[in-house]
Length: 422
Image 1: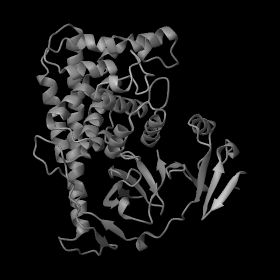
Image 2: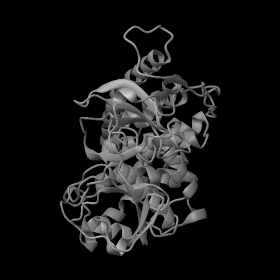
Image 3: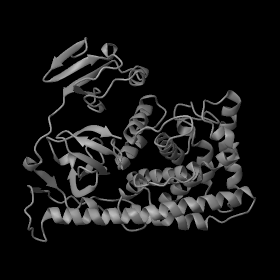
Image 4: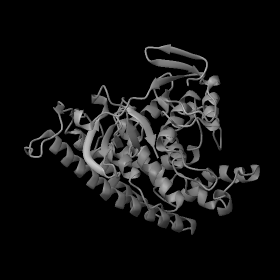
C-alpha cells in the first residue's frame, strides 16, 4: 500500500518524505527527483535512511513500479567490442584520450558455432584481457602497500630517503592509466586480502586521485605527482597513538585534537624525503580541508586550497567510507558515491571535481554487484563518463561467477540498474 501524500503522474508517484515510515517495505523502487535510485523495491525503510533524506533537505521522492524479470532468451543487447581495449590516442607523455567508439553490433543470443569475427567473441576476448591486466595490477597494488610500509618505517626512524622508490612503485599504475582509464578503479575493486588499513587506504587514495586527474587531462608527470600526493598524504596518522586511531567508539574532544594534528605530523615526516615534490607537502596538510572552510587543521577554503588537495580530499573521503573501521561499518561503494555527490550540495567538494570522480568510478562504482531491471545480476566493470548511472556491466552466472558477457547500459533503452547488491 502506497504512503499518504502521493501524487501520480504517468506511472510515477511523487511521495512526501514525511509520509514514509520506518519498517515499511514498498513494492516500488524509490528514486530522487533527478532519477537516482535511492532504495530498491522490497527494501525496508530504516530510520537512518529517513534521517539522511531529511538531513539533506529532500522533501519528496518518486515511486516507480518494479519491472518483472524477463526471459533471458528474448534479450538482445548492443555490444561495443572496443570497450575493453579503450585506450588513449595521445602520446605516452600526455593524457588527452579520445575514446574510439565503434559502431555497436546488435547481437541476439549467439549460436553454438560462431565465426572468429563475431563481435560478441571479440568483446569477450578483450574483456578477458582487461581482467588479466587488472589481476597483474592487484599484485602491483599489494607490492606498493609493502613499499609504503617500508618507507614509513624508515622515515619514522629518521632515515633520509629519495623519492625514486616511490616513483618506481607508482610508474606501473601510470602506465596502466595511460593504456586504459578504467583499470585503476577495477584493480581497487578486486582487492580481497586487506593489509594494514592505512597503507591500503593510501594506495586507494593514490589510484582514485590519478584516475580523476586522467579525466581532467593531466599530463604524465602530473599523474605521477598526484599519485605520490595520495600515496603519502596520511602517514602522519602513524604518530597518533594506536589506541586513538583504532578506537572502536566515538572519540573525546582531546582525542579528536590528536587526530586533527596528524596533517602537521605528515609534513614533518615528509621532510625526510629530500626530493619530495612541494605539492605533496601542501596536499598532506590540506587534504582534510573543505571547499566551504569546514575542514581542518586551518579551516582554509576554496581559492586557498591547492588544486591537487581538492582532488585528493575527494579520493580520501570516498576511500575511507568504503572500508570498515573499528567504530563503524563500511558503506557500499554506491552509498559512498552518493554521499560524495551530496557533499557538492553542501559546498564541501567542488562540483567539477566530483564529476571527474564519477566519470572515473561511476555512480555505481566499478566492482559493484547490481541487479538489472530485467532480473539479471551483474557487476560493474567500466564507467561511462557523463552517463554516471549507466555503466558497463558484466553479467554473472547464478553462482556469481563472471560470464564475460559485457553490456553497455548506456546503449540500452529498456534495461537499467534496479538495485545494488552487497
